Length: 95
Image (cartoon, rainbow, N blue to C red):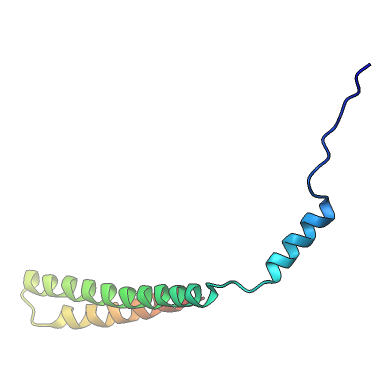
């Protein structure tokens, strides 16, 4: 008669969980560079948000001024709206 031989696992559950927990407790070697990269990405997205919103608002305001024949009325109006929109986006992104 042949017996069913089950292969014994290399590690027990307790050994694996202990290894996993000890790995989690070790500090990451690249944690400082990861933090810097994350901060750089956030700052860059803030700057891009500010610049794009303001430049787009100025562009739309100038085109409206040219089309309607006004002097800088819509440019100033849309500039103020662009600044307000960019700060609103910054607040939303920061949360």
